Length: 447
Image (tube, rainbow, N blue to C red; front, side, top):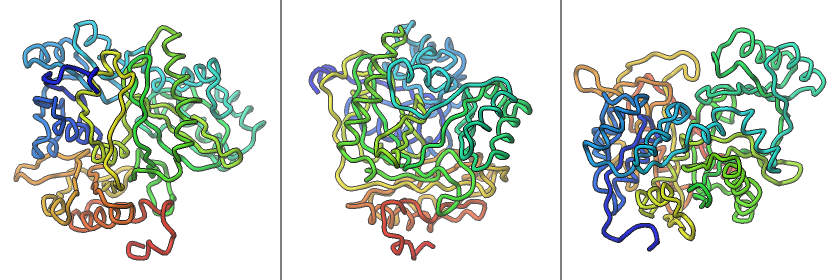
């Protein structure tokens, strides 16, 4: 780690964003020996009261000149840009041009997440395994292709749709309806003007994260999330209802395969395309049931929510130092240190999510929840204060109750103990996070 920076170098960090991922990053950065102070813009009520960062709610993260002025005024030496929208609109480009070290890709490189068609084109060009697909902007042509391919089949909005632009259709009728909702009704606006129609790959989902400096990539620990809203993986997809790390499905051997066949070819390909990728690459994978090999389903150019929460509580390395090294192209030879054991996060969401839900419901007992057992941390994704100083829910996914344990069972028991301590009649949570890694009978306590 000597090549990362001089031993005495300390840095002020600005984290862009205001959700659960950003809270987890602020938590890890604050623990970094090389980090002097952490700002978070806009942040949220939970981040500010936790003491993990100083929140700057009035800073417009889409106004690059305002962000640059803030950095110069407060001596910020590293900006971590998490949300994809400001990345796609070029915030990282402007920060780098201004000479401010930035962890996050340029607008051109962020197209890996901003356009699924671009991602698929890179896969095709550089031999990266992915599901068979076609891109359409015409609904009748898309439906004709769907009819030829048959169901089940997957329909995706081409652009950014906040994790909701994917429909897994089990019948042709469902597939046609998804095409119409995106191309004809325009439910995702400009993000859905083109759709990707993709083969359905049967297997087990896994999330894989790597830190990238433009030429080199280092893997993070494995994690697996739960996208469906209901117990037993039922009901519609969400942005994520919980996660755990490590993920047994991603063996060390499989992780090596992912690095060699997916991550490194992507990094090299992006460099050859003239848009080097700097930041975190989040590969959504499917471990193909037929071949046992990983296929790339999608890229995000940010940490996953809720995988970020379990990864950050397990990370023992100096995150600020590692991110600064990535921004400077100095990741070669760097390795990360992780705590042994396991971590789990259970997401608490507003009742009705991912559909319509009531906002500003009061949440109580959050401090008590963090005290039920050692190594429990409540990360805030969508909270604010009401006029009486109570925490209130302002979003769909609101809290990430995270716990570490000697093993997954202990982490799960601590997390659910903390969840049960929270008094929030307007919220709900899945009672079976981690079920894939346990025999079913172990879930009788929460069933």
